[in-house]
Length: 100
Image 1 (cartoon, helix red, strand yellow):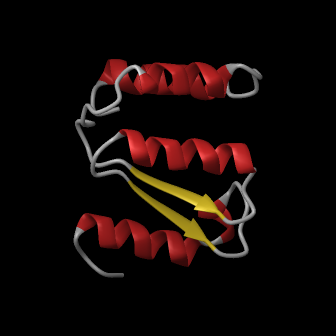
Image 2 (tube, helix red, strand yellow):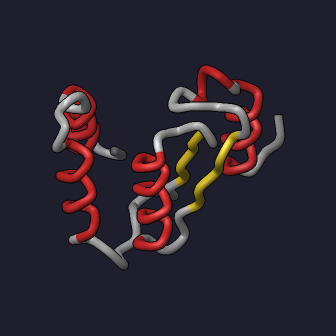
Image 3 (cartoon, helix red, strand yellow):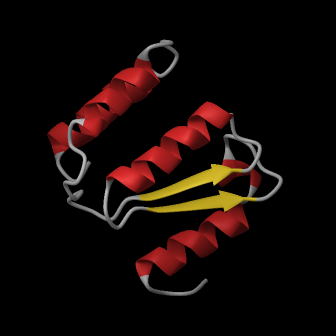
């Protein structure tokens, strides 16, 4: 997403999120790039109440791509950024090399 085409591709994927096959398509594409590094650090935030398939996909991405970190918020679901804004801010600040 560090380029305009990358951002556009991401937005197109977000628009297609409701399609049942979206997650499997995305995972298939990412699996094909296994072992390659991302151009930016990949940090994944999930809630412990997130759907098992969603967290499972995050766990798989963590295994597939070196340097990926996965963070899980307690007592939170899919919208962890909205449900746990302070926790999210701490994670973002830590990843950016500062503290809130």
